[in-house]
Every structure is written in C-alpha cells, then in structure tokens.
Image (cartoon, rainbow, N blue to C red):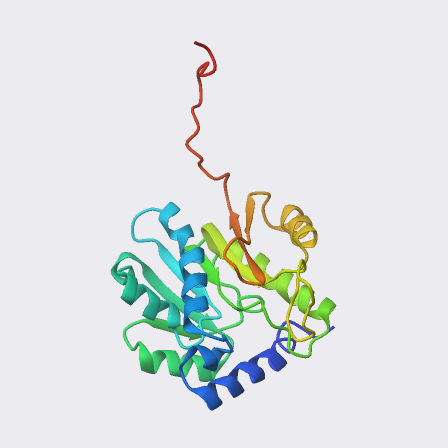
Length: 227
C-alpha cells in the first residue's frame, strides 16, 4: 500500500498531463464536458445553503479553481469565503493566475492537517472519481483517509463524489465505491448523518456527510396526528 504522500502521485501526474494538453478547461481536469461539471457543482453547493451566512468553503482538490467560475456565473461568489487546496503545485499555480485575489494552497491535509472545524463546508469534486492505475484497495484507503481528514476540518459537513458500483460495466481507471462500503466506513469512522444522491443522470453519486442530523422541517413537539 502506498503512503498517503506517495499514493496520490500517479493521480497527480495524470491530471497535470491533462492540464498540459488541454489547458484550463474541463478537459484539462479530465471532465468530458462543462455541462456535467456545472451540474456537479450545483449539487454539491446545495450544502452551503444549510451552513448559514457567508460560509467558509474549502475546495479540496480545487484544480484550476473552476468552482469560482461557476459561483461567479451563478451569482454566489460574494456569498462565501473561499480557500482552494490541491496536491499539485501546477494546479495551484494555474488557479492563482486565474483567480489572484483568492487563497490557494498546495497541501496534503492528511499528513499536514488543518485545524479541526476550521471551515464550514468542504467540497471534493472529482477528487475521488479516478484511480488511474492504482489498485482499488489502495485507492479505497486513500479515499477513506482524505474523507476522514476533510470531515475533521468541517464545522458543518462535506460533499464528495465517486463512481457508482451499480452500473452495467466498470472502468479499471475509475474508482467505483459501493454504497454499502461507503456507508459502513462513514458510520464507523466519520459520521452517521450521511446522504447519497444519484438522481442526476451520471454514472456516479454524491455523498453528503453532516456533523448533525439534517433539519427536515417536520412538525415536532405536539400531537400533529390528532383531529
């Protein structure tokens, strides 16, 4: 099993090669198109609406900072405090050039952790969808370590996406993580307050993990069933 520092190297090299070939475009971070990328951002950023006014967002695996482009277009840029982190110095340099007034850091939060509960929400879009040539078990251990580390940083919750295991066929270079395996890990080591969402037409799902149960708005504290 590779260490947390070395295990990501093959993935970092893959994404840096995509960036070198395609530049700061969706293809430069190995997404097939901009529409699907925007859909992923829209779904994950739902978590911000539950996190209060001016939430602090940590964009983990930020790449060239595309989430800021999305927020700028949708009118949400002024409603958050932002910090982008990536393991690739090349990605961070690109992000800083594109968005010079925002904070970007090259850091491994597993081996160099941030303070506990130091941000409101952590988003990990595409960080765990590809394993390239890593063995599935090695990728699972890396995924578990980064999810647990991200949750420790979050005051409110985190969102991440992975490829679904419930598909007609699986690609060897993608990370297909079974619902039951993720649920067991989250309950055991992270939080029992999680939601899986797979209703948006892609061969993946998004997992939301909250520190407290989600507020549903159902009537409480009186006999609502009586007439």
